[in-house]
Length: 269
Image 1 (cartoon, one colour):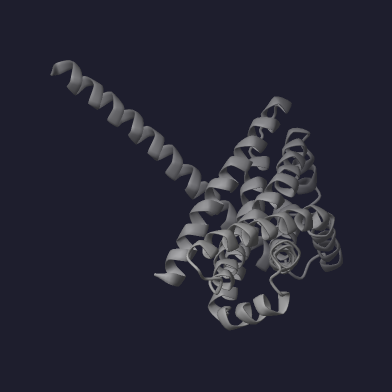
Image 2 (cartoon, rainbow, N blue to C red):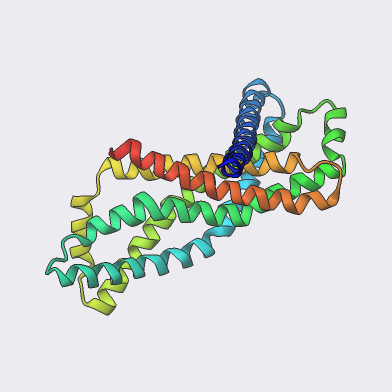
């Protein structure tokens, strides 16, 4: 009994320290996000041309250059959802639920989440590595010595650009995925696309679109904030950059999953 009590005390202490670290990291992340919003508001009239150019560049890198990858994934997922959904619904003698399945799976859940995963892997890692190397090479300090707020110059354009790109990519993903599903149903299952489109129009509501857009906005905010935060924490050693980038991607994935569940619960329960 004594050994068992000691074991529980050690386990409870380890869990408490782990929980305290997680809470501290979360508070640091929220503080960093608050600092970014403060810099966005405080310096909104400074360097408008430079920040607008940086935002457009980030939208091009995150959004436009990801269209090919997003399109490929959307077509495959849309076709797979329609084929599997039709096969399962046919067993119960009904195909009317296919539009409901498309709305629930693609527009509300899979579309925003898969878009966020692609953006995190492609743009989020690049942001974390870029900021990490700038921190290690003391380029951040050089910017501060010139009288420029680093968050205004580096963080705000990436935050706004990634958020806008993720929302646009999410809508693009939904359209392409549904179109790919309709085409697969027409070619492989001989289901007329206009029949599925009519069912989708009757099923799709404003709440479904709102949920998808809200999730995309949250994901588009989480990814740059987490990656920028870890990039700025790289320290002074080059070897710190890859681990920080890896932690940033893991946290992006975890936070996106949690937010995805919470938004669905809030809107539908």
